[in-house]
Structure formats: C-alpha cells, structure tokens
Length: 88
Image 1: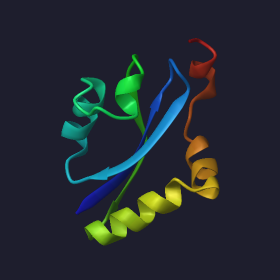
Image 2: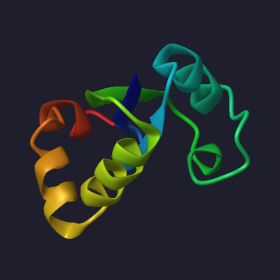
Image 3: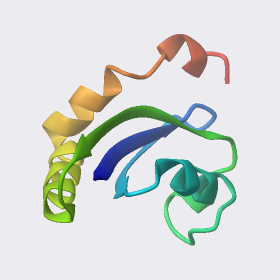
Image 4: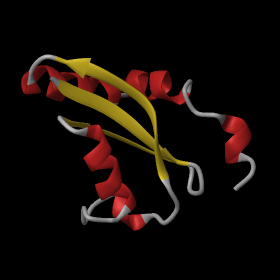
C-alpha cells in the first residue's frame, strides 16, 4: 500500500503533497530537513493534515497529481485548522 499525504507548516502557512510507503519515516525526514527540497526551506514543524491509502505506486502518483491541482489544493485546505494559522 502507498500513502498519498498532505503536510502543513503552520508557521509559514505552506502545504506539501507527496506519496510514500512509510508516512512516519517520511514525516521525520521532512521535519529533520533530510530532503533538500521544498520542505527544507522552511523551519517549523510539518504536520500531516490529510492522508489516504492507494494500492499501487501508479495510483499514488495519479492521486498526488490530482491533489496538487487547483481543485486538489482547494480540497486539502479544508483540513487546515485556521485558528492555529492566526497564532503564528
């Protein structure tokens, strides 16, 4: 099984969408800045705000692409606790 996920950084009001087979390890990598990419540019904690399981990597890549679209981001934003955004 693959997990398509969205993480959010409340400090910088940033969303990231990705896919993995091990969400716990991947989240640690994001928060420890193991990846030299988008999420490593921002300090603060990345938190999972959405996840779903799919059967194959091809399905995961398709769903990831959908969630990165305008409609997908609109869908993801409903899982953000905006009362926490104001506290940053």
